[in-house]
Amino acid sequence: MLIDQFDRVHDYLRISLTDKCNLRCNYCNPVDLPKGYFSNINKMSLEEIDVIAGVFVEHGVKKIRLTGGEPLIRKDAKDIILRLSKYPVELAITTNGVFVHEFIETFQQAGLRSVNVSLDSLIPEKNLAISGRDEYARVTQNIKLLIKNNFHVKVNTVIIKGINEDDITGFIEWTKHEPLHIRFIEFMPFDGNKWSNEKVFSHNEMLNLISEKYDFVKLPNDKHDTAKKYFIPGHNGTFAIISSMSQPFCSGCNRMRLTTDGKMKNCLFSNSEVDILGALRKGLDIVPLIKQCVWEKKESLGGQFDTIYKDLDASKISNRSMINIGG
Ligand code: SAM
Image 1 (cartoon, rainbow, N blue to C red):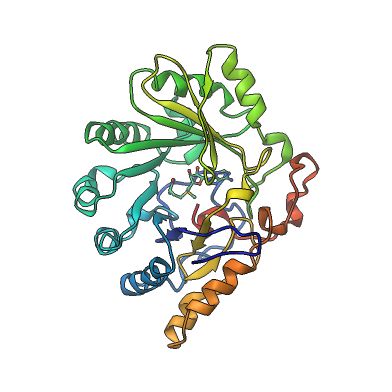
Image 2: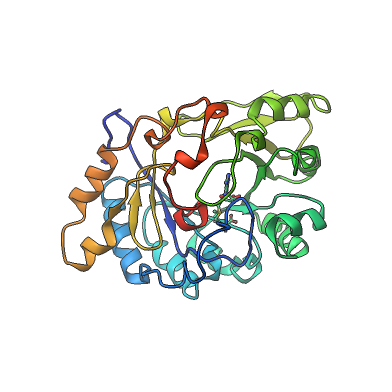
């Protein structure tokens, strides 16, 4: 069992398959990094992912989510998904949805039922402005394809004040007839993403805006849930808010991350990393490293800031960019 000093059991691993992406979402991609920053990374091979994942599973991991970068642009993504399907875990993926139509059968073969798709606006032009690529039609078609094939589909929408809070009710309208689970994510600070506290559209602001149009009911939360879930009577789907900035949910955290270059992070915001891949390549036992990394997890937010995000100076946070961590 992987346990930290605060008695939190860690049974959920997020593996980044690549730090590259076919989209250029301005809140995720660093804006000021030198050319070639991503290209020389020494990433885990399929076999190494398999071995490392196996060690985590032996120590109690019950859920593995594949992410990135964009996990589906990795050439051996299908092989990795199929390879990991041998483990007795819930396998899930977070994707921008552009290549999902090429993976439906692989997901089905692997028993992967839960797909999170990121989409930040229901207005194609605005989506292009945020993501830098004109993929709105393809992504929405693929969301429909996933629903048609009975996948559990969550749509991740990062809300940035002044940019897309006016999309919130449109997304909720979508849940009326479709069994979709929309998750509005508060904008978080990472290297190079030009975060400022004025750009955070908080959980409470979202609920106020939604209440102008809808009556909603709060759904019960599981201890490990990052999202606060709500239901509108008569709707087929639900909506939820991931309030990492205004109401963090660290006390029930069960998550660990593996970057594409095989570094373990015990928190999205931690500034320390443990080189699991390097140790594996030297033939060392990675179990003590994994246990130590979990044990040293800080009580909240990587120990880098407290919950008063309005006072936060993002330039004082030291971390990778989101695309480089694996969201
Ligand atoms: N390429 C995949 C995708 O688009 O979903 C997976 C990687 S992406 C980094 C994972 C998730 O992180 C996406 O839902 C994205 O919207 C979210 N994300 C990225 N940067 C963020 C930020 N600064 N604040 C909040 N969420 C962010």
